Length: 113
Picture 1 (cartoon, helix red, strand yellow):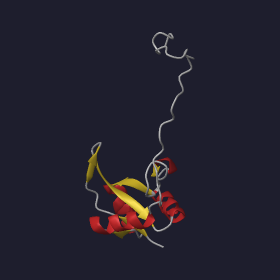
Picture 2 (cartoon, one colour):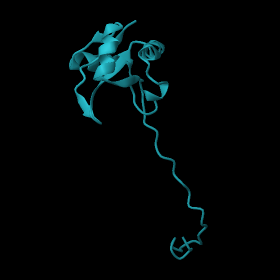
Picture 3 (spheres, one colour):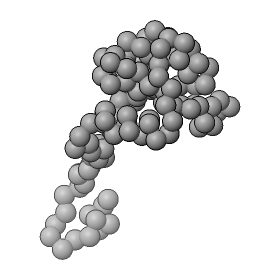
Picture 4 (cartoon, one colour):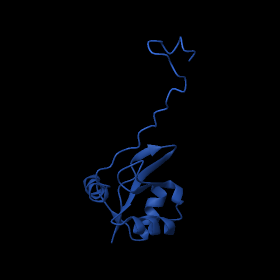
């Protein structure tokens, strides 16, 4: 199994960021722990279809020293496609039912909502 990183090109909050992916989610979490990443920074279903961590350029350099494979943009996209969760659907917000009962033909506003 392998762990992959792309180039740290995404600017956000004063850092350059990239993606850390792996062929297997358990391997991804083990490698992230070796890097000292918090499990709370993991991004995967249900928020995103491909299990990954966003890491800084500094963390990327350490990941490469630990054995992560450097990937081009096309290569990392191929990895994303390979590891993504099939039939992924984002969570839809829950619909809140209107607690005010209305008489037939009465508008919400007339019912006191």
